[in-house]
Image 1 (cartoon, rainbow, N blue to C red):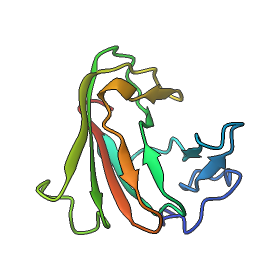
Image 2 (cartoon, helix red, strand yellow):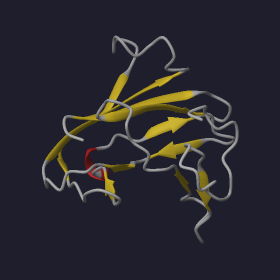
Image 3 (cartoon, rainbow, N blue to C red):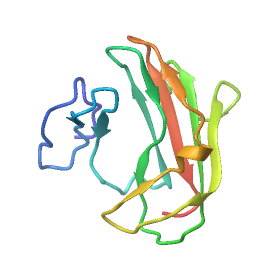
Image 4 (cartoon, rainbow, N blue to C red):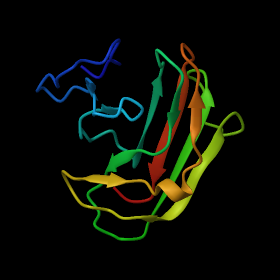
Length: 138
């Protein structure tokens, strides 16, 4: 459907329409929000927002790329508030990562953005926090 998920589900819906899942590892300080590897948006990256239920720190993302290049260039930008109406200019955004050390793992596999190059993003409970993740190759 392409509509944002109002509340993440515990299991993927199987239809690849962007519903998110929450993994609850043994350490409750580290949780994961997983979405599909859907593609076809016409760009190299993604724009999305979160609204955490409690204060959280975002330390990195796993992304999907068809590339297996060991030195992909990637950028991550963030802002408090919705991205809607704010994607043309970056003067309201903060860059939290620019790197050429993204190791592309190829289609269907997660590629982790380098933690050492990622400035942690502190997100307050209830705030909308937007992210742009972009790179030069699919």
